[in-house]
Amino acid sequence: MRLSGKTAIVTGGGSGFGAGIARKFAAEGARVMVADINLEAAQVIADEIGGIAQQVDVANGDSVRGMAQAAFGAFKTLDILVNNAGISHMPAPMEDVSEEDFDRVLAVNAKSVYLTAKYIVPHMKGTGSGAILNVASTAGVSPRPKLNWYNASKGWMITATKAMAIELAPDGVRVNAINPVAGETPLLKTFMGEDTPEIRAKFISTIPLGRLSTPEDMANAALFLCSEEASMITGVAMEVDGGRCI
Image (cartoon, rainbow, N blue to C red):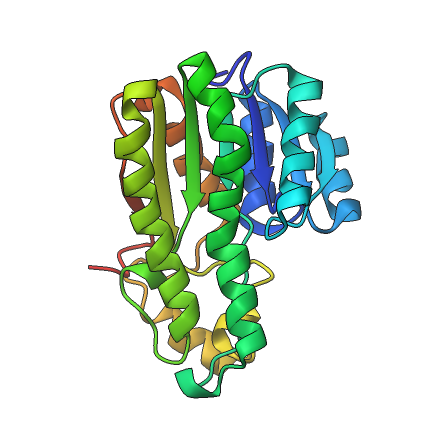
C-alpha cells in the first residue's frame, strides 16, 4: 500500500499504459481519477478500481481546467498527476505529415503538459508537495525514422520534465518521466504503420530483452517514481525499454 491515502489523476487512463497505471495506483491504496477523452473507456476502468471517471481533452484548456476542478472537488487535495495521454501520426517522411496531424500531435503530447501544469501546479505549490509523472518515450531519446514530429514531441516532454523539476523543487514538487518502448497499446499499429507478424518481429528485434512492453511494466515504474520511495528523485527520464536505447 505504497500510495495509501494519496490521490491521483491519470490522463489517458481508459486504455493502454494509463489503464495499467491507474490499476496499480488503486491497488496500492490511491484514490484515482481516470481521465480520458473516451468517457466510456474511463468509466470501465474507474468502475473496476473504485475510482472516478472524467472526460477530458488534454489539448483544450477549458477541458483541463474542468478536470482539475472536478478532482479538487472530489479529493480536496491532489498528490499525483500522471500526464499519460498521447498520440502519434502515421509513419511518413517528415515533409509529408499534414499540418493538421502535426498540430494535433504537439497539442496532445506537449501543450497538455503546459495545461495540466497551469491548473494543477498552483495547488501542489500551495500544499508544498506533489509528484508529477510525464509519460514520454524512447522516441525522444533514440528517434525512429518517419515518426519525426512524434519523436520531437516526446523530446520536448523530456526537456519539459527536467525544466519543471528544477523550478518546482523548492516547492516540494517532484517531476519525473518514463520512456516506454512500444507495447501492446492502441498506439502500436500507428508506430508500425501496419500490424503484421513480419513487421512486429522486426520491431521486437530492436529490443534486447526480446519483447514489447506491457502496461504492468509502466505501472511498476510509475508507482516507484510517484511513491515516497523515490523522494530523492526528480528530473529523471527513466527508460523502461528492455534495453532499446543502449
